[in-house]
Image 1 (cartoon, rainbow, N blue to C red):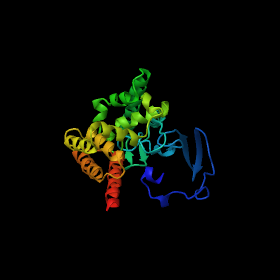
Image 2 (cartoon, rainbow, N blue to C red; image 1 turned 90 degrees about the horizontal axis):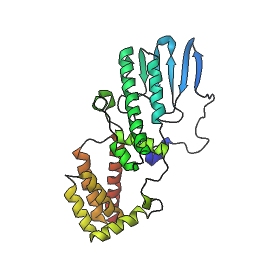
Image 3 (tube, one colour; image 1 turned 135 degrees about the vertical axis):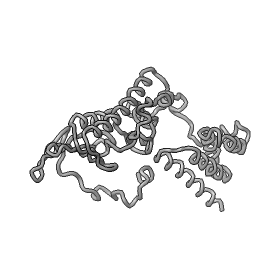
Image 4 (tube, helix red, strand yellow; image 1 turned 90 degrees about the vertical axis):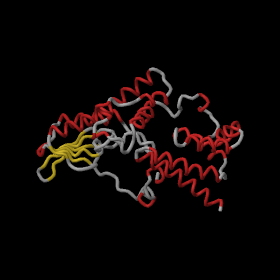
Length: 287
C-alpha cells in the first residue's frame, strides 16, 4: 500500500488497533444539526466507496469533498482500488441541482457564484459521463479492452476546458477504471489467461531478436520518435535479465527522454520515475 500510494510507510496504521473507526454510520443520506446549522450529508461512491459530500442549505453552500478537483478528476488512478466513475458523475449532478452559491472543494480554492459553480460541476459530470458512455459502447461492441480504451476521447469543448486539465490522470486512465469495474482481470488476450511470466516472455523476445543488445539498440533508436514503443522494447531487455546493467542504464536514458518529450500526468510520472530509480539500484548493486 505504501508503495502503490507513494506515501511513507510510517503514515499507515500498523494494525487494526491503530486507527479510529467511525462512531456513527449511515446509508444514502443523513442530516445533523450543529450550533443551530443543518448539514445534509450524502453518500455517493466516487474516489472511494465511502465518499460523501455535505450540503449546508442555510448557507447555500456545498462542501464537495473530492468530487470536484479543479482538473480532470482523479477517477482513473492505476495504483488505487476501484473508483466509481458513473456514481461520481451522479454526485456532481446532484450538487448542481442544489444551486449552491458557495462551493468548498477539498482541492483548490473555494468557488463563489451559482453560475460559476454550476458550470465547473457540470463540465466535470459531462466529461465523466462521456468517458463512461464511450467505454461501455466499446465493451458492448466486443472490442478488445485495449482497443476500447484507445478509442476514448473527449470532445473539444470538454478537452480544452480549463477545469478539465489532465493534471493527475488522463481520459484513457479513467476509461481503464470503467473497464475494471465491469470486467475481470483478464485483458481479452487468450494467451494471457494462463500466460508465462513477463520475465520469461521478455527473455524469449530478446532471444528471437538475436541478442539483448539488439533490443536495447533499437529502443535507443526509437526513443526520440516513438518513446512509447522504445519503453516497451527496453522493458523487455530490462526484465529479461535481472543483472543486465546496460539495460538498466538504457532504462534511465530512454525513460528520461520520454518524460522530457511531453507532459505526463502525475501518477504516470511517478511510475516512470520509480522505474528509473529501480534501474539505478541495479546499477549500484553491480558495483
